[in-house]
Image (cartoon, rainbow, N blue to C red):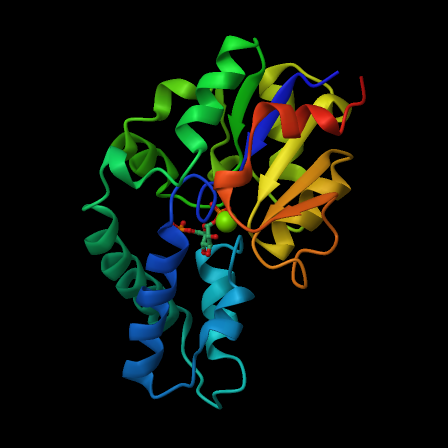
Length: 217
Ligand code: G16
Ligand code: MG
């Protein structure tokens, strides 16, 4: 029986994944490092500092820890400039209706975002009250693709991972959901999210009925 749906934030609840890309792109451009959308794909769901390592790999550039911290801070400042403009109209298509439908049926909603800005984004979207549990990424030892953040969300909601569906736009996130023993719905390119039980090209295709399908009659 479906008891909870655990959502990723960036790229699922709102399109902040695009803002992460733009901010990393600006940092990479300034350093003269090649960075494109295919490389950006690898940063999705990955923590800020791990993302920086991926941006810097193969650049031949070496930075001290203090310089790396400054680059990560710069990226976050650029990112914050973008996300402060988020309004409730920036919920991705179908997400508001889905959260509504879940509540009507007594199915819980949880948030498993690697972003330290997740609470602020939920506030901007005025969507915080729809989630019965929001995992603090600072409390998670291993990031996606480790299942820890999804398991933590299930634990906070008091449900078994077997009765959860996870929704993700990143390959690392889908891997985390599967490793947690949950059903995975991927949003995006099926070639990148093939490990998911179901891949949808857009959040607009999400519905309570579709999520219930994975649990049989
Ligand atoms: C998100 C993004 C990642 C980002 C990470 C950390 O995770 O997908 O690209 O690097 O959060 O974000 P921040 O720098 O805001 O702490 P998710 O799990 O919501 O997709
Ligand atoms: Mg994401």
